[in-house]
Image (cartoon, rainbow, N blue to C red):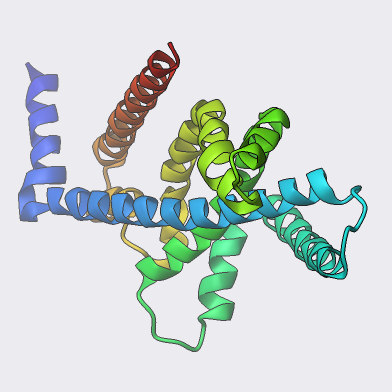
Length: 246
């Protein structure tokens, strides 16, 4: 009875008093917003880089059939070079440091919404991993699919967009789903730039009540529920795509 009474008092002090539960609700909204838009940024960057790198891997050994082909191959080589630099730097440095560099250095003299900074930082970071995931999916598609596209009168770009990428995404769907989960959890470091996300909201409550157990476990529980929902959604989507193959 004593423990039950103490728990109720602790719960009231951490969540009900002064509407402290709003720190978690507002933080959850920020976390979901940053994750969603960072995912879009990461997908765009990742797909573009994956196409550039896979195109280079597939065509850099072919002979030049015309001066235009030679010029395009040079441009592709240059783009592939810069893509490799991007991947090396982003995957070789901690996301926390990247977030702080973008906020304190790149946007240090600009009054900008912290959410936008977080979206840019996590989107750029996620793009490097999405690029390698999608590239592996593209490279796993048989070269005969390119030939099939050309036999239908498609050029390289339409073949890649309508034939190769849908198959590639289907092949790497579990890995992309895992990247979404990783991205969601990575946003918990947003507090380094004083962005009040879900983790920061729990920490604010802890700082006001000097009680760490309930607010931190509440935040962990919310993350866990979201991850479970995402995992179930990815599994269902993967099951539907497999069913469509039959």
